Length: 212
Image 1 (cartoon, helix red, strand yellow):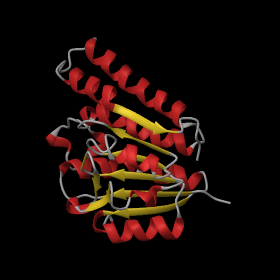
Image 2 (cartoon, one colour):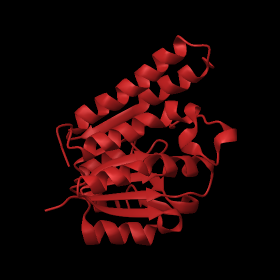
Image 3 (cartoon, rainbow, N blue to C red):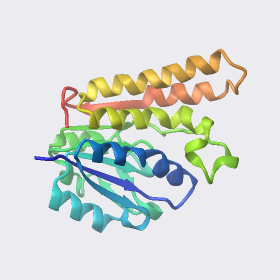
Image 4 (tube, one colour):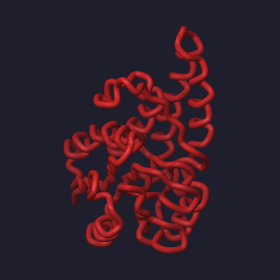
């Protein structure tokens, strides 16, 4: 029986535009691994679509791209998709990764208590820097790559059948590698503190031995 991968990819501002494009490659890999892919780009990344897909297909892996806060992850035009105390039970029996600010702080914990297998994300703001000159070709932005590559690696590792713990270590190693590379180069060293911040606040809750 094939696994199912649900991903939201809102694109209503620079941040969500970058997150959407950088996570698009994971769709091809999931298809190669014979996942059923449920892609919700742009306006489709709305609450009705997300709730419907979660209930109808009960996806094994769910990735949310977007903004967030302690209690919420949002979709297109910042519409609330999953909110602690309202509908986190929809994440039961699922592996979740939210590329958004702070949602692992409260929503992540409540989702795991409500039965989510694991919830990965950030317990403070997720920071990334990009080159405004590359806004039309975000996947060619070497500055953004420093901050977004680990997310891509994390998702791809899970899709390949690695555990949450193994996948998290791979992602953390990418961030550490980028920090070390910056420290030994002539690039903007101020980026190091932002990379370190993301590394420090990248967390996984729940069953660390889980696989898709």
